[in-house]
Image (tube, rainbow over all chains, first blue to last red; front, side, top):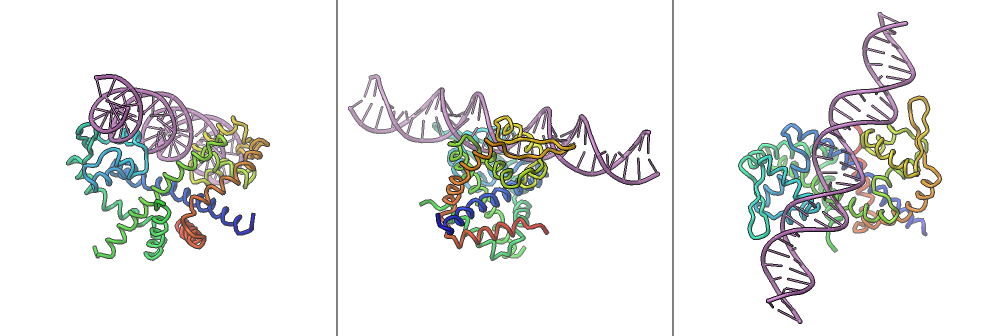
Length: 143
Length: 143
DNA sequence: TTTGGTTGGTTTAGTAATAAACTGAAGGAG
DNA sequence: CTCCTTCAGTTTATTACTAAACCAACCAAA
């Protein structure tokens, strides 16, 4: 193996570790922050997706969040019970949308959460943040 | 709120979503890949840290991985039982190191895993990967 | 018309992680 | 000496997630 090749490999592992560390740290702080409104990071994720893409199916939600449909079933069960989300069945598919309570929560929690996430990246300049976004987008692009 | 300020906030949220999506996707593939050697992503993480920083305490390991010490206790229990890691108690602290089996596993699994992680970032050029690493490092820097 | 595939959702068992409360040992201050 | 704090690790209950098996409904092809 060439020196270059070796460095390239080490780089991949370093990137992975850095990214994983930042993620775990960040999600912990996020959960802590969202406690104030009685929801978790994943619930917030769902609230936003359902709020933005109204009447989407569970499968579509799973695809957007990159999680399994099994996970969606469980999360929605809970959020339905909490009265934030409603399911409307048509044929065999279930369409999701926010209840009034859910919509109110959305309006209340999104602005401070935007603020909070902005702060988590505030060690980077706006220019650097844009760069980071470009790199992340590129990483996920389908072949 | 100014237009700029608003964009800055949206940027933070976008960054967070992108990063989270990449992470969940990536860790799933990693787990899948590591199945071949019968270990999980988190176990690999621990194997590497203990392999590199020999004889570190559980608390130090927790700090390196950005997880709670409770999590470390549980993970180490399992990996001790699997015969990969040994604990040596001195006073009240427990020092971790790899067993011979653990060291053998380390040697076997690290190279292909480096290869695998390199591939996960291969949509970026080497230059871009270095940039990404710099940005991630900056994000985690202590004040 | 049966048969078999595809699709949306559910269930279940297991893994990783957390927060918070706890144990037990040291080490210091009065 | 006793009390108090701190520190390393453990325990417990809970959340989020996965993979894999499953169910039910529709659809198409033979």
